[in-house]
Length: 340
Image: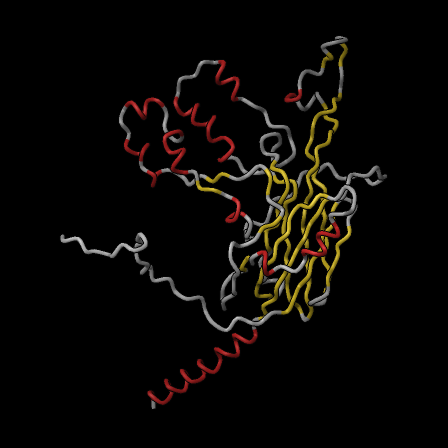
């Protein structure tokens, strides 16, 4: 009796697996974001900095544009002159140093996988190759308009879920402002020249000079997330921010970082001062859409073109990599075994 019950449970589980696979709805998504020319309008943009990003967002872009430079900078970070003189083994141990990534100063407009990709059941969103995109003619037409600056174009496939379970996709592009501004838009204070003038001999100081850019978090011109979820209908929820250099007025009595409240030229007290500021312009929209239709999200400073396409549903799980790859060999050279 117990054996028959066990077999029945196994049979039910086997029948449920195909149904669960069919219940998952995969779609293909293509996005093109561009910046409009700055226009003199009466609309006033908020001077509040960009909000913190969703830390759970799927990042399909960084793996395509970043480079691991940990090995290059191992000897220039983490240890001071005393550590090296004392022959500290940790200074040369890569396991005790954090991985360091280098990124370009400008994100390429086209973000794509090097080869055509396929989706697998139970896997996260997958970035597609440029040959799998369909916006090339439309993008060429948009770029003909005066003042248009393309920021990002990418295509991916993902399993659509309810809003509660959906995971947004990170979208960023354009210039990296981290050398000039913080994430909150304030100007970066450069202490490197002060360190050099002070004649510091600590090796870690020189290490900072080398790794400042790779260790800092980039401040992208375009940054945010796109969340697509399924609730009887498809919905696109955008949380994007466009950063532009601007100025803002500060109160010198409460912001001493911007200098003295006394005008050094006229020796007159001044209460306010215009200072550089990296303005963040938000695009926050949530729209119900139909699949296969091309959707345009209008904004005075940004343009977003999106399409959600039906696709052949994945039917298999991702193959397991057993790590049994053979060592590469020169063409025409036989593999010979070496006696132990």
